[in-house]
Amino acid sequence: MIIFFLKKLRKLFKSIGKLENNIIDRLLLLEKENKSKSKAFRIKSQEFTNFQYQLKQNKNFPKKLAIVICFYFNDKKINILRTTVREIISYNFKIDLTVITNDLSNKQRKILEKLAKPKIKNLNIHEIKDMPDTNMLPWYSINIMKKKYQNKSISHFMFIEDDILVTSKNICYWIYFRKILKNLGLVPGFLRYENYKKNFYAVDYEKKILFKKCPKILSNNSDFGFINPKFPYAAMYFMDRELMKEYLNSDAIKIDFSFTNNFLKSRAPIKELLNISYAFLNIPGGFFNKLMIPFNKFKSIPNYCLIEHTDIKYANSKKLKNMGFGKIKVKNLIN
Image 1 (cartoon, rainbow, N blue to C red):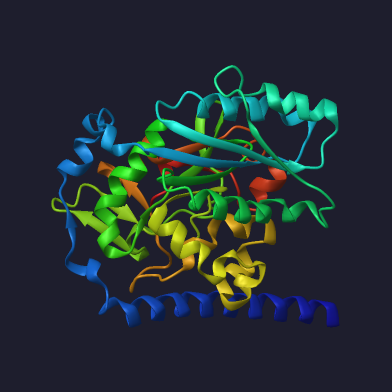
Image 2 (cartoon, rainbow, N blue to C red):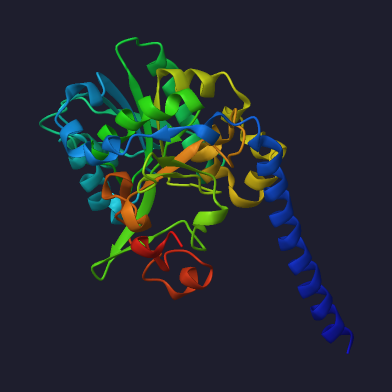
């Protein structure tokens, strides 16, 4: 009998907790709404319909892109990493590529060195010795990015996990729409998906995005725009020099950053926190975070903001689907 009542109490408090979170979200948006510049801001519809033309413009690509790939050595994941590297070396702009990894044997090091040849003769391999925990590996990238930032020839910075495929089209999208969103203090975001049985599944969204309840920016005809998901995690980040400067000079580069943010505390473990903390810096009024996801007519998400998670383990897993990951098709994500 006691167990029965305890279970009932647990469900009651759980439902109250969810209600409280919803109220907090609503209050947050209402309190900041009046301060938001975006209230009357509209994006010209042509900015979306002319995107194919923008792909041909050199101004929408980096002058030089510093990339750090996080890879804890695993023989079974070498082919996945190879796919990621091949995509990167296909870019038609200058790159500075570093793989951050654990302490390697000579054999393992040679395997990594061959990945980018012949296009990149000397791949930067940064080995971390005496790492206290494998989940700490991404955090060692901060010192690398600090050094890269000192190089004025580098215009953009990207951190990705080893199984994330970012195309040059993705990068063009980011640079093009960054110019449009910048004045609002907002940043274009990416949506991670898995291609499973010829369907694209959103990896990081447990529930559909409720369009009416989500902060957004619309085009002048309301057919296009950007929405602001509550937790836009994508296992990577992309920044220009302005964002990187803000990031490196902030508390977001500290492991305890999530302790000051109740939402991140519950959603971002230490390993994942590095990829997403910058989105919660200097958030404009009326928004959950700085990252915005574009949408087209009929609330579909355009492919230019989709990045592929090539190590399929969410969409084909009953356990993870039951937890809410990898079960919603991208085309159905916005409700």
